[in-house]
Length: 190
Length: 190
DNA sequence: AGCTAAAAGTGACCTAAATCACTTTTCAAG
DNA sequence: CTTGAAAAGTGATTTAGGTCACTTTTAGCT
View 1 (tube, rainbow over the protein chains, first blue to last red):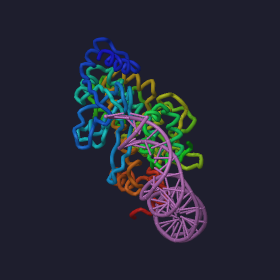
View 2 (cartoon, each protein chain N blue to C red):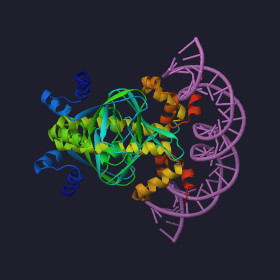
View 3 (cartoon, chains in turn blue, brown, cyan, orange):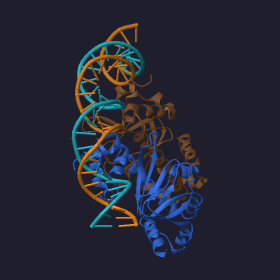
């Protein structure tokens, strides 16, 4: 567990500096969780008690439409944060599913604990501020890609941006992330 | 100007509390700017020196594709923050245009000043953290709406969510925000 | 190694929405 | 009030991508 917490500290310290005392305080607010492939981290209608930092593994966050079709909001792997941020923030029942594509391990942070460490340790507030801002920028680019690019160029773009992800994820899920049908994706380039 | 700065303070204090001393320090890091309809706040290729808080007015943030078609990333009005966040954050040339749909007024915050007030006044770090997080949540919902909904239901959804905006913006721009052609939007409901 | 199930590929057909071309309406500026 | 330009509406046609049905390939279990 020590090495795992060390990884989390490194993750924070990529962005802000922390004293040992600050870190001791911070880390005591996280819980550990481990799940096998296919298990759910978050389910529609269930409470969303935590935000999760992924120690190892890979998950998908998605919603299911009336026709039963899956739409992938996000893939998240090592060093990523994932949650149903909306439900988490407002402490409401989940609106999406998050499940494991591989056996995965997480550090879990409750809303109460997040606010506590943010207001107690300013560096943490700055850490999450910068992280959120980067996330915002990424989502803006994804929106632009959905508005301006064809399905095929979105695929090429993703291949360039996250080549490692493509290796770890079935193409039908990539299709669902890009907003294209499996069949159409399969007809691209090759 | 006093009342305008007061509006900005109120905007901060909707989220975090500030002492008068803190506020004096914070407000000294903003500049005022005023633009007429059709003038540019940000242009592709130009430096993006600021993040802008809108005192009054309305702007659109958009990119232009190879065919000259406009794709609207964001509308922003009173109390909204707007910038080319990506270019701003990395201090690179602008990648989008932002121009005024109405005569508008702004408070401008440079990256240097933003970081200064965030690290100097923890409440500000928390303010931007929470703002960014909310922005992230909104963008996630927009992405889901692009992935899961038809053009028509996206339109209805927007009509419900931001009815005031629709009044102030030509429908062809709404179309461009929704990722639909002007003609198709015009054929919806009525 | 052998077997099952999931993933991927592919052809035929269909449809939502884009595009193009034109008309009508609205609005702002002299 | 008039007028020119921008916005909005509408019909005809095209097209990117979806859907359906089926085959082939790959990968995980025992």
